[in-house]
Amino acid sequence: MLTAQVVFATITGNNEDIADIVTEKLEELGCQVTETEISQTDATDLQAADICVVCPYTYDQGALPDEGLDFYEDLQALDLTGKVYGVAGSGDTFYGDDYNVSVDKFAAAFQQAHATAGAPDVKINLSPDQADVQRLDAFAQQLVTSCQKH
Image (cartoon, rainbow, N blue to C red):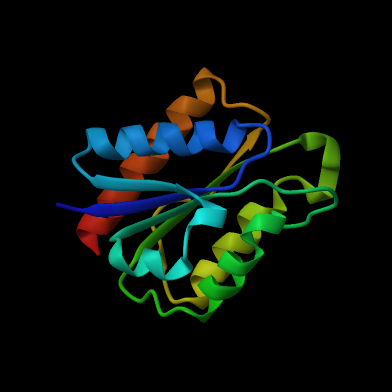
C-alpha cells in the first residue's frame, strides 16, 4: 500500500480544504494518508511517505507562510530520492506576479531534495470550486500513477 503525507498551511481555510480534497482522493485510490498542519510537522516526516504533498499559501508580496519557514528550510536539506511530490495551493490573483509563488518555492525545494515531480503544480484562486475539485482529484490520481511507475 502506498503511503502519503499531505501538509498544509492556511489562514483562511482554503489550503486546508485543498489538503482535505487531495487526502480524500488519495484514500479513495488506496493510499494510507497522514494529513498535518505545517507548524505541527517535521520535514523529516516526509521520508516515511511514498507521496509527499504540500498545500501552502502565499503571504503578502510572495512570502512563504511564517509558520512554515522551518519546514521549508529543513525540506531543502533532506534527501527525498525515490519520493514523489506534488504541490497545490490557494492564492489570490489580486497579487499579480506574486500570485501563489509559494507553490513554486515549495516545488523548487522538493527538487533540491531530489524528489520526483509526480504531477504538475496546481494553483487555485481563493477557495476551490467544483472545477478545482476535479483538478485536484486528477492531481492526486497522477501522483499515485507516477508513484506506481517510479
